[in-house]
Image (cartoon, rainbow, N blue to C red; front, side):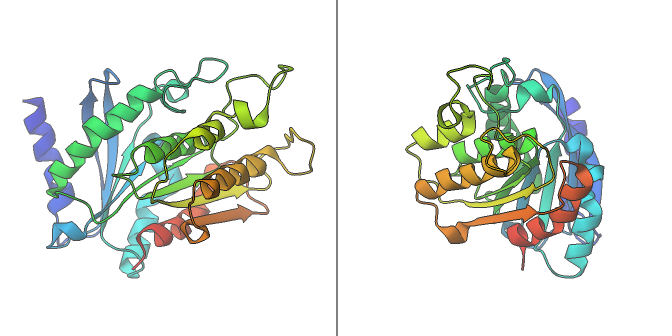
Length: 280
């Protein structure tokens, strides 16, 4: 009965072809996370040929209004700047445990459920969205997130590059590490978890990457080179991707001189990301 109610509720989101951009709520129970996951779903009018529909997965759906995702999508679609798409924004549970790098908790044991969250996205959410959208395959799939949600998005997208072709990271928490910097044996290359993962991985994903970072996000500067860690960490991620063979044309790097670690700055950058990911 619950499945039927959910099905009837979400159907208009994907088949209201003559309406404008809409935003509604849905829920999906996850056996991997052992909780009900709230979803905020934003969609443009759906094309007659559903294979022309694109998908954007967004972490931290509970904060989607701060991102102004609906208004931005509506404005860009009306201006014919982006293709038809569905945005599914997953509301976080315990984000300090569910986000991170799958199978690699940090030095304070945060991220213990990142592998469960990965399984939820891949095994439960993605098939659910496809079924409700009535598509066998989306034209393109992107995954994006801010801060720790950005780290999670990159980790999951990199793992499932057969499904996810584009990744957007706003102020990614690439400092995520398995040793405290106060530990005398701490090493930037070995102990920053995502960087170490990229460095040791044999994957050569055919993906595109979009990174945004603000030069005013913090004052921390581990290596005392005059560049804040948020910028250094993001640049180091890009270096590792290039070392994997990702061409320059597949990587966009945006560094905002006055950018800070907060939603108004991420929201201001969101239209640029949307045009990059889904532009006509």
